[in-house]
Image (cartoon, rainbow, N blue to C red; front, side, top):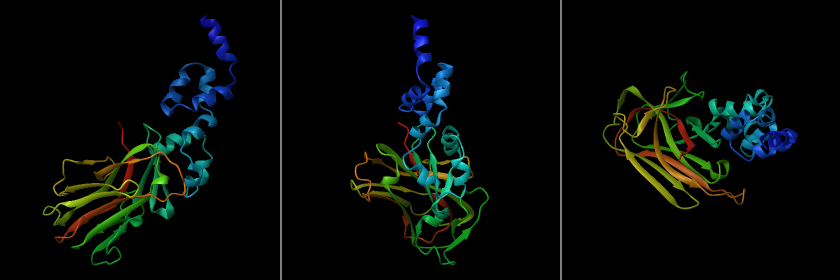
Length: 265
């Protein structure tokens, strides 16, 4: 019986095996390589990984300065490259990556892509370059009363049927003030379902909800929201993530961006 099954598997066309594996996950595709040579060949094919890459990935990648080298990769290599190397898109204002565990879309809106009150007033904010940032510029708060930072992302650009968390990605300058007095308000407004998530945190000293990312930055979760299954691709539902505090003078906050990632259940 086992020999018959092995014989039947050998007669299965590689293309058929690839189509079958394409309906699984990246982890299952990698594990199927151990089944047989046929399955290894099928699991490495572009047919599989073109299905596992998110819809419209070609349009997203085309916005990257490195698009030509990315498009020349085998699809499997491209998939895992995007899991470990976020690419810069949207004129350098955003980064795009894939979550390694689920393959779902991750975005970070860089400081230049954020709406920051008084950002172009040198008295209040300084734009600077840091070698460990993925973006060409980050924003350093020099001195301001009115802290108001917003990121807006269309939900149609995120993975459907997915719970996301938003994170403020930041550092604290050695010389800083006002961040230990009044809580910063971290808020998420989801237009579609009118869900509002609000957290109040004091950033200095480092709060328990924050963590070091391993890339030279810290992050703190701002809240979570759920993306429904997609219906009309033309719908303009927006998630707004904001950071506000307007009661005290503050300085020394360095902002790289606001990142959205799938939550691992």
